[in-house]
Image (cartoon, rainbow, N blue to C red; front, side, top):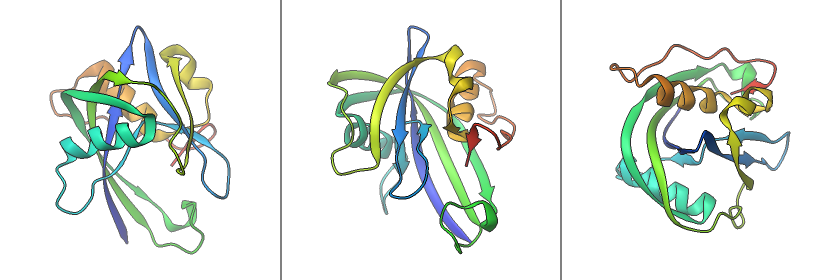
Length: 157
């Protein structure tokens, strides 16, 4: 089984959430939250700020920890054919943009950034990370955990 620890930014302002359109080298694009892999020896708190800067061109501050999600992606459902089963542990932070100018990630897989009304998210082809982050931000569970998000239709791994 492969494993990834990642940190994600949930940036909500005025009823809109900041989303990034992830365009992999092969396959369809999906909307996701800014964020990504925590590097070796990096604090997830620092990783989310770094990832926001890399993917959006903006400076950010963490306002609070929202929660942690762990999900298993079966080998047959991975976007990498022939890859093993995969576990993704995501740490979700409420983040506020403090400066910079939104722009796509240079030489990366983030092709577009938008501030989408939360009510419109359900009509987008998106990563389940978006739904998890929004659920954490809207409910602020004391446990820092929400139930699994069903994958299928517009919701992807």
